[in-house]
Length: 632
Image (cartoon, rainbow, N blue to C red; front, side, top):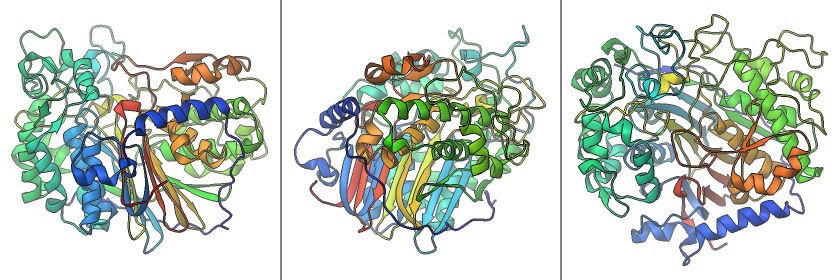
């Protein structure tokens, strides 16, 4: 069974190289906050290059920034970054390293990613200049009804309650395994078996538990305890693993070994497929649990029919750059691209810090309004992608931005059928966003200049809460990304075999056809704003990429309030409130973190110098590594 499907791929255009414009001074508040964060995270001996810690085995030594040559890897986890870097050291390319690192994240970040989920993979081929993507999004089972997320007792949607997220109903057909095999077949040099070997060893020997892993386990303890298989793995003795203990997952090691031996056929057909179906359709729960766990619809035919789609990226030109992203069913590429097109009509570099942030928030709200109105799986709905990414449409939307006052939210979507000369033509308001905040991301560049940006997920932290017994991985609850109430006019309505709308936004920036920056982030729909804010921080405001990524964040997704990190509110809240913005501290109902995103990036200089960056503190901080470090 071949779980791949190809679509046309495009080559990047050629643009005049002028280099990024740097602003002489960066905001004092931002510099103070981000420098303090970066200094705290990277304090220590000269292992700040990222390579020394890998060579000497200090896997808990997370270094957020590494500068050097020959290849780079950035993930949220030191073990995964070390695995990816070792692949590059052994002659593997960026795709080989990305798959190996992603498999390692399935071990060390099992609540955010793994073979029970899906994701989006962006690849730049240095030999051809071609940018391609893989849509490895989960799909709705063929038997899924349109009222799957309605409470049968009331007819109302469950919303984000335990009944909704901890159930077989929320499990979509996983796409991660097919994504790995497709990427290796298309552009890799290693076999799937070889790429899985490091993660298999990691699962066998285990990793050292940190405070983030323990806290995420505790946040999900009630859900995990509902399933004996999940509790046995993640709540040994009835408690989350202790910080400093070693967590091993021999079941996952055996599952990886099975895929190494038999390929993804062993995942999408055969005994493992039957066990996944059984876990979803006949959930085994602890008699003591008070959580109702409705059975789901995943079937053997859904797994056997799954295909990872190779498809063209979105592309938008932004000043002297081309920005590539994910096409539908992800809304990441189009929403980031549209917001950039809106912002391109303004001179962000010359603005004050607060003026810049006001324009960023307003452009984001406008793009999110259009996301809600038009974005869905393009195999099922007509997505007006060309219009959404056009400069004419951006101009129509940009004319609604008042430079001195925030618009009342939510703002209505733009009318894609309006005359090009119209300013501010709108249609009925968008629907509610239902996407959750977990996921993980990685960035890889190899010695030949190939680039991979890969975002993968099992949806919320802990996914559905359901471990496939004896297999060592959690199943996703990705189908909650569909709109919960069915509406024939909603592009994200539930339909059998459809892929729910995503916000994952692996992004590549080129200049004159050459890559200059790759970045991405987890965070549900805040992925889009994290990528957008990081890009404008760097490209327009002149922040070095590490400070651009570390800077305090705010997210405006066309809601009444701006959700912001506490540091952002402290620095900018009072000033932005004079524009009419209302800022509320971040945090969500499933985790204890008041953070937005956990990004990774690699900047590529003209001479091949690589600056790999990961979060200095969010989600416990990330790990950036390069093959041949230089002092900086």
